Image 1 (cartoon, rainbow, N blue to C red):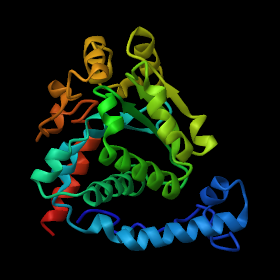
Image 2 (cartoon, rainbow, N blue to C red; image 1 turned 135 degrees about the vertical axis):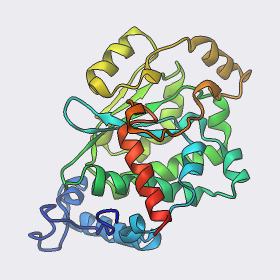
Image 3 (cartoon, rainbow, N blue to C red; image 1 turned 180 degrees about the horizontal axis):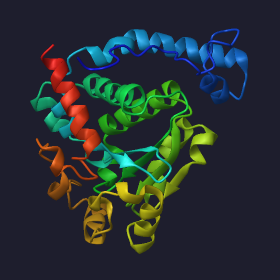
Image 4 (tube, rainbow, N blue to C red; image 1 turned 45 degrees about the vertical axis):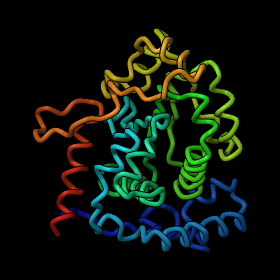
Length: 284
């Protein structure tokens, strides 16, 4: 039986047991210790958990796990030199066609992300004070993304959901392979981010300096796929609208069935065990 099948809103040592209002310290810190605002934020968090039934999410089957993985590549690649979990995403190539072909919805994808994050903080790296290093690989981004209201709408819902419900969980956010015009897209999402979150963001462009930075921040958990390649031609096509923005050579991956084949990247040991966990839930 998979471990820890419930994940409550509060946990031992998160500050809630000694707080007069039962507030986890992270929510107080999020609101700069304004107690009234923190109480309101935590109340909204509890409503959100009830809506998505988050407490029992990991105990329920997740039949669209592989579909959601195909819709937008994302994975835990390992741990950085500070022992923080490394989470890599490629948001530029969110594929709505895969979503429609598999009768999936934006709600399914949002629920999947909650599943992944809850797995992280309850099974993969439990602890009220644990944090992660996020990597957003922007390969494939184009002006077409900015004009796609479905894409921008999902992005804003995702950022708002993570910011409101998982405060204080970020160590660094590395935005890699950012095109020269990325600041225009960043402006759409910047107002949704707290100042403390903005200060943890590092924006990098493909090249030798980015590779050095990635090796510094990710250490042995750096996936080879993130190392700089010949992206300039692709980015230029994307900016001019001459390409659909999908890097198909790295768009999909086939999960491995043997731990010995695992390596930092989409088929990391962390991903291997999370998929095994999900499969086990389908059979319970």
